[in-house]
Length: 93
Image 1 (cartoon, rainbow, N blue to C red):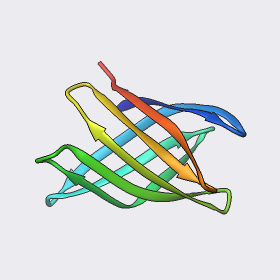
Image 2 (cartoon, helix red, strand yellow):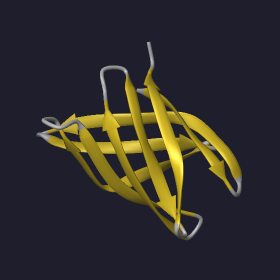
Image 3 (cartoon, rainbow, N blue to C red):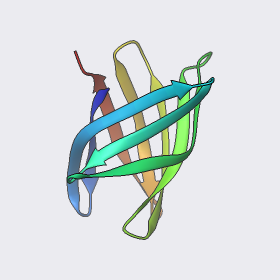
């Protein structure tokens, strides 16, 4: 589990918990947000280069996720409506 933040959006900053699971070598990811949960569709995590990507729908807007996982951090961005916003996460201890 990861504590994440998305900053600088027109709707303000978002914070929550990201959960990444692996079942039968397939990865899934979910973002807890405002008491709800968003599943990152088409989620791909490449263990060799530590890159991850996917997309989700936020209030009817497609949002594209792209990031790199280090030991205890994830850095990347989410893109929607032609704009990209920083995505950062730290591993929950």
